[in-house]
Length: 71
Image (cartoon, rainbow, N blue to C red; front, top):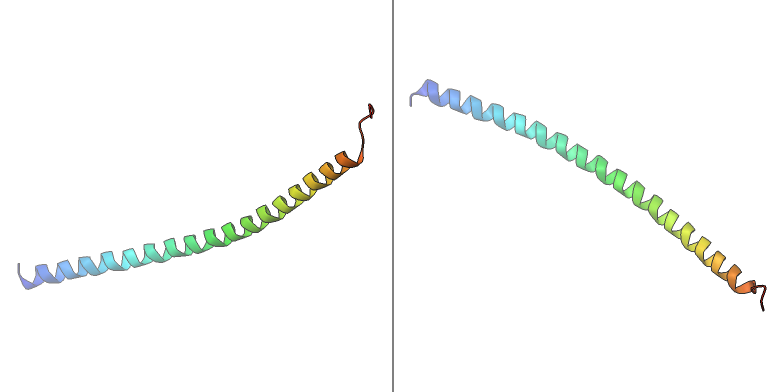
């Protein structure tokens, strides 16, 4: 393998390396955006869970307050 072939191989490797760095950067950005979305959705789910629990507790307390007609 002569100097021109070695130089061509190095250029090919450098080109691939730069391309891979670009892909890794894009993937990292996508992951960060997904984590932000996951955090946002987790907060929404927590809020909805609290609301559902309050509705359940409220309906259960109303059921205990109201006696059935046959009492």
